[in-house]
Length: 343
Image (cartoon, rainbow, N blue to C red; front, side, top):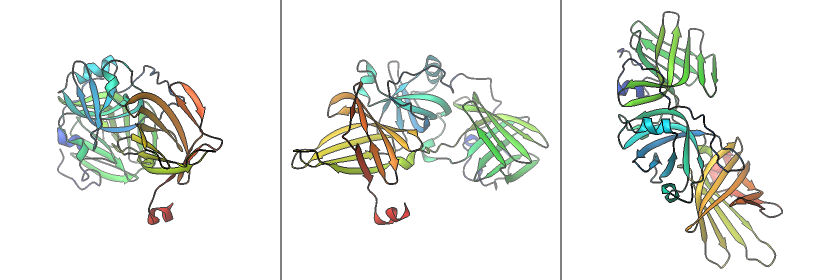
């Protein structure tokens, strides 16, 4: 690697430089899921970045998010499974994906939900990636010489044996198959294709950096940050129907995307439901309940956010949709005084 290390993103730890450089191979069919997943949900979730450990065995495949003990069933295509079988039993992974209900039969029934991998970012057994979260795009390669590049904080930076620059980012575009980051001096283009930097690391993106002096080829990764984390927190509300005790409902959305809902009728015992949450729109979150006590269920609520409050008007329970009262169910986010003043 070049000796210069003063660029803002390179000093933030280049994941690619930690695993070493080698000539990238051809496309590897792992990064994009083209088959249609029948989720059975009323609204399609927005895939979000997930980071953690993937464990595979002849019968099962599971995913454990960073900082969590919760395991989710991993729903894989045959191509994805074949690629994972080439690695050890447990590997660090970054991917965009979403949750669906699990089958009531088979190995998956032991898990709270299934995770579908829609777009791979990185798969490696050479890094402790949970300890190295990134907010930057990183690219690196050895064609035609050693080079590295990064995008973050409104700048694009790169370095090679005879060229080191950091310049303002003038434009960027990102879709399902390609990402492009442009400045007046250079263009970094990422294409969704598996890219091998070393024997034990697979990236979801091929990279091309075009500067005034040269055109470089290599591999890249997107930021590992989960941008849906702003939903996390605890929400609470009370309701009362004629002749019924006051009901307190609490909803907790945890960073590992697990969801806990508790119901406490005044003077009675608390009941508990568990499942997962995921975004379905800018101001909508889907709470998918998969366990009510010890019973397997499939309950879906779509909460609309308005300020500090979430409101759901209906619930789809085991395929049947029911209204949640004449005004719906409204839960207010529980924050301290400082947080409340900032909202």
